[in-house]
Amino acid sequence: QVRLQESGGGLVQAGGSLRLSCAASGDTLKWHAMGWFRQGAGKEREFVATINWNGGSTAYADSVKGRFTISRDDARNTVYLLMNNLEPDDTAVYSCARGVRLGMSVIQEEYDVWGQGTQVTVSS
Image (cartoon, rainbow, N blue to C red):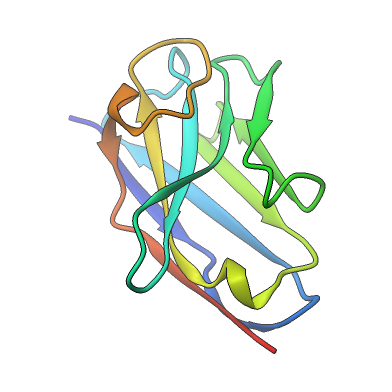
C-alpha cells in the first residue's frame, strides 16, 4: 500500500521560494503520473501541476505557470514542486497525489492516493 508524505512547506515572504517534496513508500511511483493540488482556507481544492510517468510532459495551472516547476526522481521515489516568486494568493495546504494512469491529468478524480498535505504561507 503506497503512502505519500509531503514536506518542505513553511512561511515565506512574497517573492521568496520553497521546494516541496512528496516521498512515496510502500510502492513505486514509476508507472504513474503525479500531481500537486492546493486548498486555501475557505476554498475548494484546485489543480496546481502534473507530470507524466516518465517526466517528459508537465502541465500547470495558469496561476502558477512560469513560477512553479514540477519534477520527479524515480530513483528516490519522490516528486518535487519548486515554487518561485511566491505570492500571498499561493497560501494553501499543498498535497501531492498519484495518478491512476501514465498520462497527466488536471482532474482530481483521476488520482487515487493522496498525501496529507503541507502548509505554505506567503506573507505580503
